[in-house]
Image 1 (cartoon, rainbow, N blue to C red):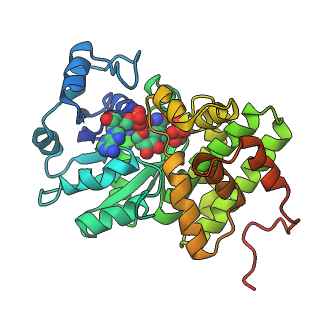
Image 2 (image 1 turned 180 degrees about the vertical axis):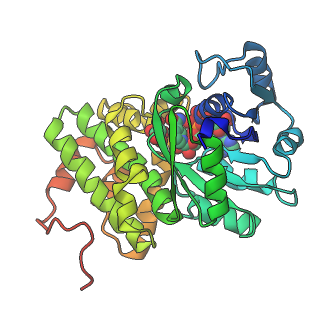
Length: 344
Ligand SMILES: NC(=O)C1=CN([C@@H]2O[C@H](COP(=O)(O)OP(=O)(O)OC[C@H]3O[C@@H](n4cnc5c(N)ncnc54)[C@H](O)[C@@H]3O)[C@@H](O)[C@H]2O)C=CC1
Ligand SMILES: O=C(CO)COP(=O)(O)O
């Protein structure tokens, strides 16, 4: 059956940043969608303007998209058979899930990409800690700039879940029109790819900002993928996943596309701007910043070699100069190009 003829669903998007808004706009063509945000005053302005003037200005809301400020009503909107989409950054996922505790939750997917700063946990691990493992849940990820999705340009995503029912339900709801949705059982691989590509985008932004050329950019992306694969496979992800949309696909997009906030952090660092200034000028999250620290610590604990991540973290947190980051990476001993070295 063509997806366009499938049943309308009730979908609540919890989080009204750029990405939650773009996803809400995209799915509102086919479903009854409610977009909820935590800042009541901002949401009232957004409801009146029918445009997210705060995080995604210039993309008018379609008629099927409601805007809400009442959290209980937003959760009730999804009802017992709809879909909840958690659209906050990783830092907001734990508190958001806590506020869902004890409520009947039909299905839940999260859009955030990163490791939790304080704990080094991936989103599915946070979900399990807070809500257990009985609710069908998963990660919706892939190369997808919010502005392009809001404009209705083509995009391919992956829904990763251990629940076949959840995967089928998300494909049925989101796949169609300009959006292709692939499925994967590899939640760890999908989440690690989405998280660490943001760190690589900062690295590539630094190199491009320093004018180091396209050769350097290609080398960073490729060796970045090797780093993602080493960490991800150590944590239990499948190597094949890192060659797919949520690995290589999102890595290429974020490292090369100037719409990327993480890439723009790197470009700003190369200009000698302070991190605080860059982040406040962005006005959006740059998940690669907290993620670089979480990944550096996790990789050290797990004995995974992550030279690009370590170099980015040294620039972000230890006062290392961006040019020294490059020297530090280049000065490493030669090694075999193998993605994942055989155990010694
Ligand atoms: N913007 C994009 O193109 C894409 C973003 N993502 C991911 O989606 C997640 C959200 O990104 P965006 O919506 O773009 O970010 P954004 O910076 O545009 O908006 C963040 C939203 O989360 C809220 N927020 C910020 N910190 C919070 C916290 N500590 N607790 C609760 N809420 C908080 C803000 O009020 C705002 O509504 C991130 O993990 C990002 O990596 C994924 C794919 C595409
Ligand atoms: O994840 C993204 C695209 O897939 C968005 O990347 P940035 O957060 O760097 O803008």
